[in-house]
Length: 385
Image (cartoon, rainbow, N blue to C red; front, side, top):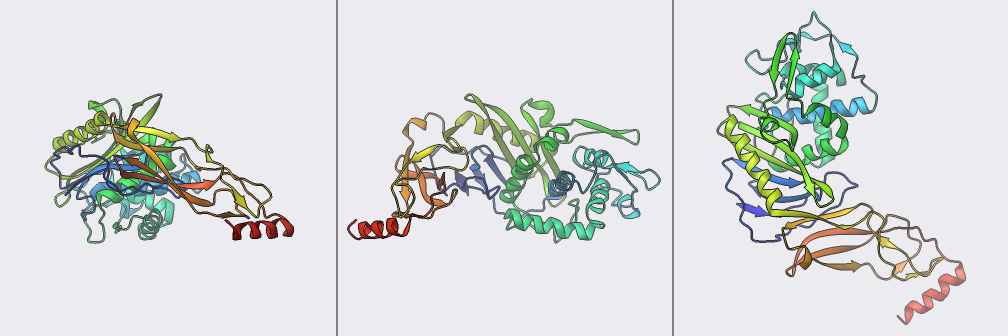
């Protein structure tokens, strides 16, 4: 089943939520994959998808969560990117037939090099070594992975290891993977820029190319990760950033279960091009911009400014922005005290009489309670309102 502008994703508590809606009838492209999804990271909106909630084996796409936790540990100064660790026997002996960085217990390796090995070379040995560096053991790290997945709202994802080699306890969906990818890019932009666009890496005198072919085929693609096992097929999460009016716009595609390395690259590029060519992402309101100044009761002032806690964007078919209309639904009467950022209503964006997005409207300022006499007077006034 194909869905267009289907379901909004929350990639962080501070980001805007969108409504489940169909904005247009533009047919989605035919993608030769088991499941796929195209996500606009600027508006946090799914543009199109096919079987996005189908449970899949994520293979090495698992390593995105591994990288996320390592980046978080670096950000929190629990790890130093230049520090060197001793490679454990468990990391060294990871499945010899699988992708490896070729680290060795006899040679200490830096966290920075391990990250290149994890992301560029897709080394399963690097994944175990990083897991042990963060949590002491891979098993303890997997607990952290599942805890983080729960915190992100990845309801259909479970991890059984740090690398993605086949396990009954390793599964996810295209939808969950799009949320994870967007979170990594949003939460760790500098690390994303450093590692995910790197085309090759040499370690132990062995040079290995990044398996993401799109890094060579399209200069706007700056990541993200490939995956493959016999059961999973060939998978690819890719991301590209291109001009959007006076700014830029990022799309993330998730393609799973394709027939070959070439097909996953071809279908991912097809999906990205389709999204950029057929849809616009429009900025509706700026962070802190007052949408209205309604009356407030029992407060130290007569009115309160309401608006948005973040810049608000919406993705819609090209040429339809002029037909977009806002509809404000407010929780009246507004009664003090009201603190800044309290939700006071919702703006629904309408296109051809259909709701295509919803945004929470919040108080842009704090209004304290009036004196007892002011509150009594407003209570009397409310009786006759």
